[in-house]
Length: 414
Figure 1 (cartoon, rainbow, N blue to C red):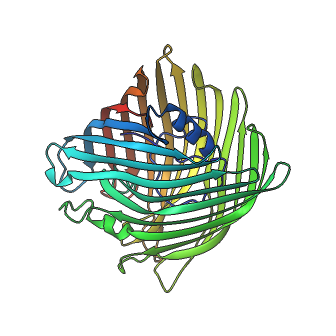
Figure 2: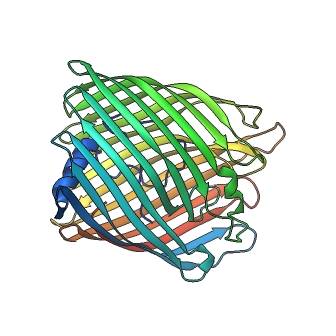
């Protein structure tokens, strides 16, 4: 599987609560402006004022093995995802860029043909970087195959429709005020699978609204510190096991980027309460992630990271779980055009029950994996990946593993 972790960027965006795959941050993040400038520069084709970057991918060509301690064992299977599309960029002067992504892809499974699915990412964006004011707007649909909860380590197609608006105003030298609004609707496409393991994932379908505002102190590219507040609301689609909740939380972000040392952290002191009589257990804990990066990613580097996330449960006995982990990742360059990466992480999933008397549940989790990436030519890369996760539960039948080995061929980067 392709592993991606959302990182803290230069603009403080609203954060949704969701499961993050194993692996930790893969590189020092760049600001969204830097990312767009690079993408526009690398776009190969010009249609008048529009720059177009073709995209093609044959990814997640993988052997997948799912094992549960009890119940009917699913067959081992082969899967692959093929995509063909484009990214387009329109510059209105040096400060404004319009973007469009049309990236359809088809998910294929050899045995389980009910899992075959047409997915894709379809996004529109506006990015304005003016003298003292920044405005970023993105909206669209992202539908991809992924694992949505550690309780059920089975890849399924999941769709997110929504958008975000982010603004930043320079108040004084190095001092900025920021605000962000995000809205999304998550829908897990499992109704037609006929798989008892994944049928409960429809209970996670929900709408989330997040607003965030605060102040950021930034010193060039090297470091920034942000403090603010975030209000979140989650409204679940199904009345069964309704975990709808809302709350306001103080948030903080720190980012430092040195020559051989980096730090990135984003935390929120969450205080969530049930809304409208929903069956949600109040939550008062700090969530977020911290990563210390050492060395150069091009030659040799290491990342020590830790995180805690709230993940909604599909069990009728538990409201949610705390996904806590600590890990180490090592990267090494193998010549000018290839790079290797290895990681190991350990942690736990601690469940919170709806009612007293329900047995305490804790899953001890360990994951490890490796990847090799080869740059074959400009914008063309080949990747090899392997991942294994072990879940050891203290309740009968809760043990499970997830193993995948695969390859990815991508034209057009990202």
